[in-house]
Length: 303
Image 1 (cartoon, rainbow, N blue to C red):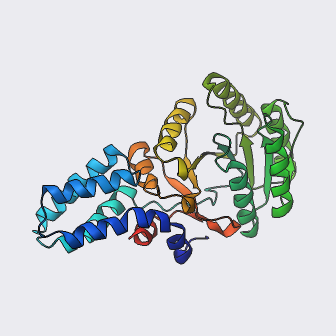
Image 2: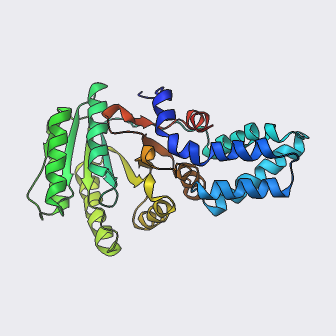
C-alpha cells in the first residue's frame, strides 16, 4: 500500500547500518578464515545493534549451520548467509494496516512519548487516502495534550474525531465513538488509549472495560490491538512489549523513530523474542515515512 519507499527506508536505517553492517563488513574484510574468533566478533556487533543476546545466539547458530552445509571457506561470503538468516527470522509476513474486513476497530496502545498519537494520525490519513471511512476516538483521557494532539491530527487528515473532557471515562468515549461509527457507516474506528504501564492493574481494568463495550455494542466489528514502541529505547522496547502482553493480546507492533537510532536491530529481536508481527515502521517525520513493514526489503536496506 505504501511500501516500495526503498530509498527512504535505506536512508532511515543509516544509523543502524553504520552500527551494524559496516562493522560486519570491516570484520569480514579483515578475516582470513571462518573460525570461532570471527563468529565471536560478529556476535558482539549484533548485540551492540540491539538485536539482543538470545536472538543473536540463534542467528550465529543458524549461520554456522549454513556455512557448514554450504562448505563456505571465504569470509567475504559470510555476509550474504547472515542476511539470509536474518530474513528467515523476520519471516515472510508483510505488514499492513488495511483491514481484513470492515467494520474494524483498532485499539492503539503504548506508553506516553512513543509516538502513539502521531502514528494514529498518519494511519488515519493513509487509510482515508485509500478510500476508507475513518473515525478517531480520543480515549486517552488521562492527558489533555493527547486529546488536543489527536484533534490536530484529525483536522490534518480530514477525519472525524469523537472526544470528551480530560479525565472522563475512556470506555464512555469508546461507547460514543462506536455509536457514531455505526450511525456514519464507518469502515475503521481507531481508538487512542492510555498507556500507563506503571499501574498494570488500572490499565488492565481500563482496556477490559473498553473491550467489553466493543463486544456488547459492536460485536460485528473485526478487532485489532496494535502496540506502539519507540525504536530508540532498544531492548527496553522488548521489555515494554512483554509487559503489555501480560495485560492484553497484541496483534501487531508499530515501531517508531527507526531513523533516529542505531538500534534498528530491535526489529529482529521483537520478531524473534515476541513472535508478534511488526506491521509498520517509522523512518522519518512525514506522513509517508510511516511504512508498511516488508521483512525482505528491511534486510536488503540494512545490508
